[in-house]
Length: 321
Ligand SMILES: Cc1cc2nc3c(=O)[nH]c(=O)nc-3n(C[C@H](O)[C@H](O)[C@H](O)COP(=O)(O)OP(=O)(O)OC[C@H]3O[C@@H](n4cnc5c(N)ncnc54)[C@H](O)[C@@H]3O)c2cc1C
Image 1 (cartoon, rainbow, N blue to C red):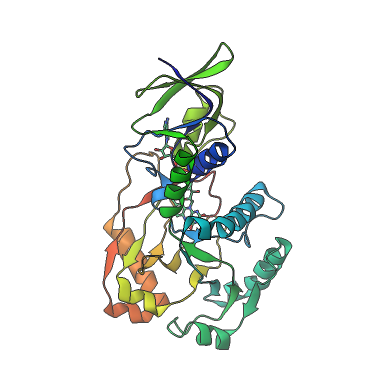
Image 2 (cartoon, rainbow, N blue to C red):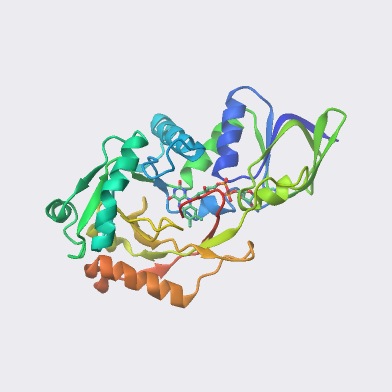
């Protein structure tokens, strides 16, 4: 028998679950289908968990609007949902004269984006804030509002709240096709027959493939792999802020950050790859990440690290990673 819903969401990452929560709370009947054995089978399970202010997003962009709305909503709901927040701030650090010259334009862009508390600081203030940072940090942009969250508990809370409002979640339910017939969408998946008035494509890295069920996708996803090195807990005492590099044209660059669980991590890389299924680490990249972390925080030398399971990032949706 076909199960009928107002809304069917394809993909159980943070985006699909946030959408499910909103529609369920609005009183609509909702179903989410996730192809993995559990929710968070994609990028949402392996990101840096930085809550971005949008200070470096393209001015007037949809990306900026989404970042600002997401930031405000997380701060608004987090206490009610008991979601953690590490109020860390971020420093965009210039490690050479060329990068130092770019700092005023980063501040200017942040102000244009409405993030008014961003300001440039000099070496003395860097030392006061981050005594363990390598001495060749020449200057930085301080972004007080950038914070760290838990990447798993937020989408899990969205799932629970959606279910509490009547939503259903199907796992091991890869959507293989979507057909329009008799005024509704029929969603082809292994788990059960589902139809809905509206289908939301929240399939992340596979968004173009899902889109191709109904039309020529108006966008292409070109995958990138991101690897991290995670240091053991004593390392997190070495730094307070998220340490961002001055961004290169192609990526946001390698970031050093504490995790909500009390570790210190460095990454992610942003490697163009052809396939989307296999997430693997390689020793050479991890060694380079490890070495870069030591350059930035020499006191790390004495401490242990663990390679992480890498995650994929769809380049088209994450502009700066
Ligand atoms: C290394 C890395 C670091 C990042 N750091 C940050 C950060 O610090 N801050 C930040 O804000 N963002 C960060 N991001 C970006 C962030 O992780 C993503 O924007 C976000 O997770 C995307 O969520 P999503 O729900 O769109 O996609 P996903 O989490 O990929 O979810 C899509 C889901 O759809 C499922 N799916 C796919 N096809 C089908 C199908 N046919 N049928 C059913 N289910 C399907 C997948 O299994 C998956 O579970 C980072 C990303 C990466 C990879």
